[in-house]
Amino acid sequence: MYKIYRFLNRLPDVSPDQFTSCWRKNYADAIVKAASGFPGLLKYAQDVCIPADSPIENAPPVAIDGIDEFWFKDAGAAELFFVSDVYLKTILPVENTFIDRQVSTTACGSLHVKWHRQANRKENPVKVIIQVAKKASLTQEEFRHHWLEVHTALALNGPTTRKHIQRGEYCPSDMLPLGGFNPNSCDGVGAVSFDSIDDLQAEFSADYYRDTLAVDEKRFTNPDLSRVSLVNEQVLLVSGWTD
Image 1 (cartoon, rainbow, N blue to C red):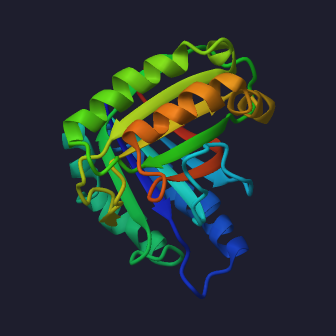
Image 2: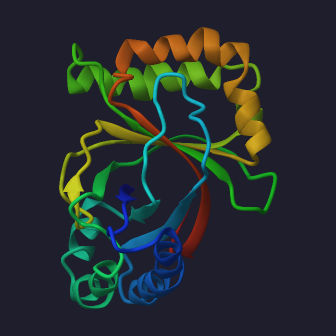
């Protein structure tokens, strides 16, 4: 499976309320309608930003207006979608009314799901989305191995982690301009879902996070360049999706 994140910033003359209205209504409707003729798009979600301090010790919050998440069958389907008539003639014109294309960025890559369990609640989950910048001394291969294998294994060994975390998705960046915007400078994006804000706060305030995971973050990430968004996920499209 292949995933695209789009970190959205509004046009200077568009207010926050106008951005939200257009994004959540006109734009969402355009994507859902377009997807009926594009079987390679499996899932689409909008992440509404929650104003809050970053729960990640080594990554500050980023100033954006919202996040799009697209799950595709494979990289070929993702590439075709954003050059298709469906996108160019139906979705792009709506985007141009409220999204600042010069500032908004995209990150994409193969999806790695390291943990998933059935959600305990039906409400939209709370997610931490981390734009991860690698430590300068590491190669891309070293960074990916430590992030996807060493760090995630440490995280799942936490005494309460499997209780608190509902899903963990990790996407090393291909650094490609898929998604219609310039590539984000991050080396990967992680998305960790929780059933509630209480579960999230309990996990990141635990001694295990502070004493083990936060220490390990410094072994493979650059805290000066990594960024975090705390969001509520709103799933708007599921078509042919399997976990």
